[in-house]
Image (cartoon, rainbow, N blue to C red; front, top):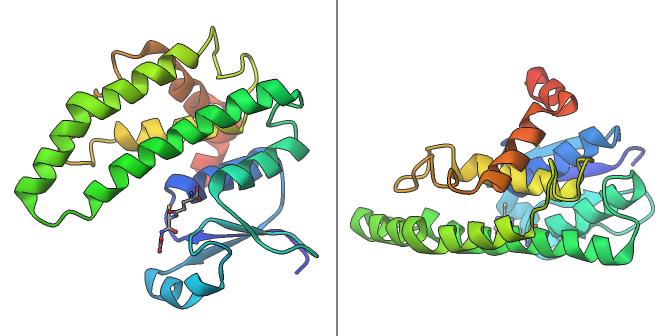
Length: 203
Ligand SMILES: N[C@@H](CCC(=O)N[C@@H](CS)C(=O)NCC(=O)O)C(=O)O
């Protein structure tokens, strides 16, 4: 293996896409392995924790868990704080995002429409607002989480806000985070970053 390799599903979403964005910002030339769902079940037992994303670099065992991958990429490339305390503060927000995914993802698997509607209403009127309120309190003057520089934590916040405000999740209004100006500001600052725009323009 000559180049680093990122393994994820063949979709521009969630934990895999935030790692791709980090690799793009870090100017790391990598092999973008995109799995089809049926390939995944065969590969799952070979991964470190039975999940993707997985990141591989020459001469080392694969690493998994999006936050570990993001911090690893970010630290080497100036996209994660060098100061230990500031790094921990960023990692706490990254854990906060994972908490949200852990609460929303189970509703994707609910097949009964009435039950799903109820679960989504509970998220939209309760959990997600509480989640965003805590996120908002941790955000400063910005535009990014840590100030002037876009770091891996911002990519994670960006992917999450984009997902929740996409209007594609039944029962979650696209305006869900409108009452949270700092969270919205981070999303917009990442979206409008020239490097992120260039990435999206590539398709
Ligand atoms: N904490 C892990 C969660 C990983 C995770 O649940 N990944 C999902 C895709 S976003 C997955 O692998 N799903 C397929 C499966 O669990 O079989 C991380 O941050 O990477």
